[in-house]
Image (tube, rainbow, N blue to C red; front, side, top):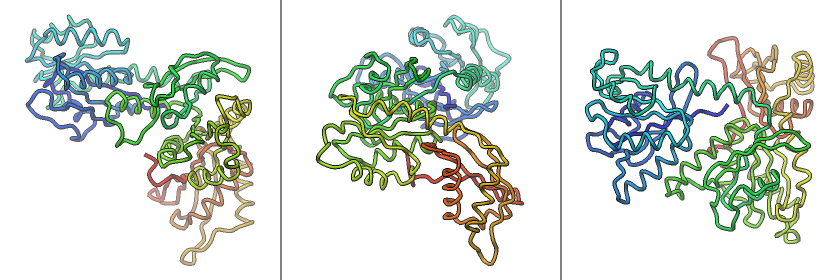
Length: 451
């Protein structure tokens, strides 16, 4: 499943960054006595009761009419939109003002689960009468904490992860195939989504970035039931200045994590760029089956050939040699009839299980055909192989000594498994376990820096 998101929201100088650092266990945010020292958003990861989630620390809202506060407000709005749960942080010594009431109203309109934390309570559990006044904000889940002393966080975290556990169950038991359509701005993502769904529900224009958020749509057709994420175009980080666009990009990454299949779109008229490989690398590293769609082929057909263009793509996407490439035109409908069979095929491959007996027969035969090379006079010995999980298919190899494994031999074993079991369009993971507990490794062929 995708990683749930918690946004910490509140007025300036109530301790948002201190709480952020307490939750993630390290000092990432700038903490100081001056109001508004966190003007931008900081992100980290926290874990509680087996749930790992992203934490977003936002700038303080005071509703002042100045350019900096407008930027902060826009960024907070985007973080709220991205969040699965919101922690509304207040301060006991500051009490309740119109700012708190305005924030509370804004959070109610979001429809998201809200947990109120009243910070700077030095003795949570033995709370002064002032604490109970915070219930007038209208949120029953209200807790007294001390972020600086890490007091009262157990009850707060229990309340935060409760809605996340429900989300995890719902994602695990969904009855549709989810698709993330990703790519650089203006490659035709929204046009493709509209065509697949059969209705126009995203703004489509020639202006890059007209889809600022990830839009979710569930639909059915003769191929089955699907959910599609039409994501904002993913730009290089150095080119992202606007706070809303930055968080929209984060939502696009969340969509890739949630999706069962990623459709990576490339503009044929612009060719490939480093950002295309980084976008595809997100899906690859998340273990998602993928299809590369080269859109606008009608505009370049005749200037080059499919084999020539595909050869260039294969060189750039050498870490994803398993991925199918389809040349399409959303405008003319070229080759779109071939897309649905590909989607179903790569999804089925990512969820395929192989019987242990059959798997070991294939590996044994592969070893006989091509024994592992020697290393310092010793051979790698594979005792047993089993499939540990699906989506992505994960195989556990029990060996004598993982240090004897050569990269080229691992690639050979991967190719043999793909040849025999049609793991088409999906990454596969190998885990090698030696006799010693320390001799364990998970392996997948990845780009050097997909992010």
